[in-house]
Length: 93
Image (cartoon, rainbow, N blue to C red; front, side, top):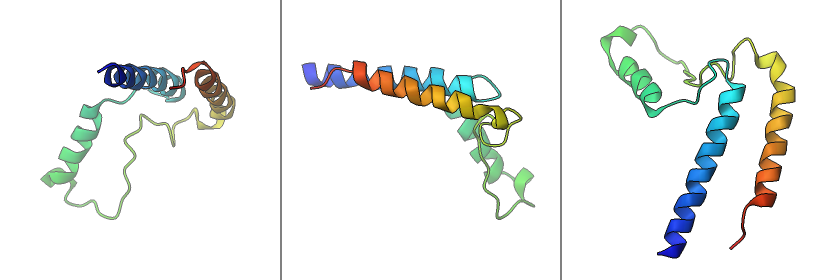
């Protein structure tokens, strides 16, 4: 049971870390939620999207194509450093 609780807490720590890191990079300034994906899927399945075909729809808060894209290189470097520091601080089983 201790191992399960440890894995659960590590998983939650990773989720919290990535939520904070990605929220800083995305132009919308919040992490995506499952409902964001669900709403896109519902729209694609509806008659409202009947004229759409052959498209890749990024539901990413503007991360890939947003106006801040050209400013992200320094932020990505900062994210990589945060990941490195987190890996060094993580307890190893």
